[in-house]
Image (cartoon, rainbow, N blue to C red; front, side, top):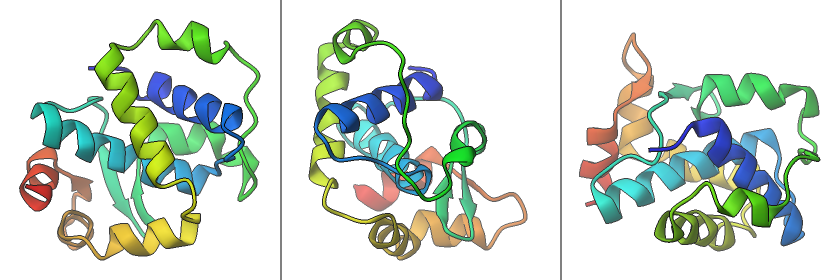
Amino acid sequence: MYDVQDVAEYVITYSEVKDYGISNLKLQKILYLIQAYSLIHTKKPCFSEDIEAWDFGPVIPEVYRKYKQFGSTDIQVRGRSLEEMQNGFEKEDRKRIEEVVDRFADFSAADLTILTQNQAPWNEAFGRKEKVIRCEDILEYFS
């Protein structure tokens, strides 16, 4: 498993290199989908941090807080190069992350919000007092 901040930074950097751009809202949905893809393909989560059901879909609170200053604009991070970051991920995991980013690159943050809000894991968690979207619910939904 990876630290969600490392996965988020990789997604942001990869999106910059591919000239996709990514807002904080879109990043949240992409991270949720990366978690789903990891669970589907490996039966293991990509990261251990909780995903919560917020009004605008799935959110990882600590990642949201880190990038909230960007508002609805694309996140700009001048950190390590993509090549440097790739060394921190297993090849198959990196390919899976990139596949999710590529697949949803043309979706807006609003499109992804609607998509994820129409899925059972978000709906079920949003209706609970504790709004954590459980990995077992994600796996069950996508299986």
